[in-house]
Image (cartoon, rainbow, N blue to C red; front, side):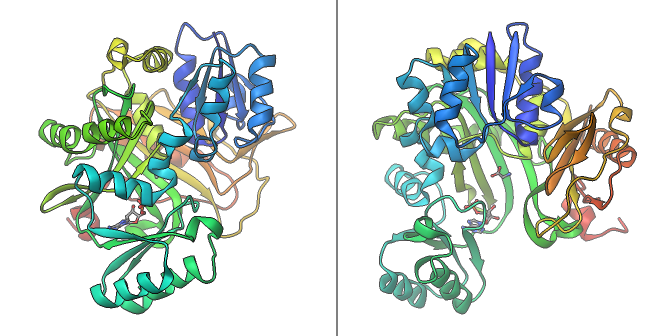
Length: 426
Ligand code: AMP
Ligand code: GLY
């Protein structure tokens, strides 16, 4: 088979790496890819949202299966466009991708189906949203309805902050049309976990869970980023919690989407808060997480091509999805200045030295005269895979120490348990 992966980050490198292990894959293409994916297949210089050019590439290269990494092309209907032309593609339709692309839609689906989530309301009217904030008082969470590159959510400790977030969405329109509607909801307390399952629209694969780190610096300080590290499985994840999440959240969600006339096929990602009252949904995403994919895919004990084909054939159970009992820890190496402005083009040294227990997934990298140089804010995710989290963590950091480029920084506390973070002497 000829397979096309859409996207250019470390998540897509991990997808391409996993696909390369399949004996079914002959030619592998990645659009646009990075220096890491170039060693697994052929990069095509096409942006992930340039759907007409992707369609043409899929025809020109006789692609038998397309895997979509990021949310933007899914929200823009890439799956519908490919299917109209008879091109097999793994991912949800545009209508089903609204579970991520519209927080109002997701909230309404959850409320109608009794899926546990934060109590909240959807507003199209600015005065009504203001009155709601006045009536409820802080703390509150204000969310732009649409895709806002991870910046559309404000957890507001005071009424003034909530009002400022509302103004940013509806008056200053900093997110454009994505902020014309807002969801305002109660603040939930607890630990966050990302849960993933493959689904054919009716059945689910076994679940897998991971944690990610959004802040730039150790101890969860500094600005929000696209993610500075991740690990799987979370120490608090258990078979009984997995069952609760499956039956109270994921199954009712795919059933609700099927009832709405938009059955969900692909990988469903639930961002959960583990509250004192049980797990509640913070958000749904219509794809694998980044950097979660980098620690989850190395645990997948199945052929990813077969998984995708089973989903497309309408029976995910055929794929025999199982998750390894091992653990993975992923550490992101970023460019100095990220998530603000940063320089590109620094040579990356030591990539070949990472041992067999460490995986190096590229994000912002490119080839320049045959050598790998930095080309983005998040440059690499280095993953250690071991028998438990402690072993995986050690392998990841040992590999991190061997990789160098000018201005590189990373967090030192990925997969350190929270109690130990709070008490470094322990
Ligand atoms: P979202 O894009 O909806 O996942 O929101 C991004 C982040 O905001 C989440 O990962 C949480 O850390 C935080 N967040 C979102 N909703 C809530 C909520 N209701 N209560 C507390 N934190 C939240
Ligand atoms: N790790 C968060 C996300 O992929 O949205």
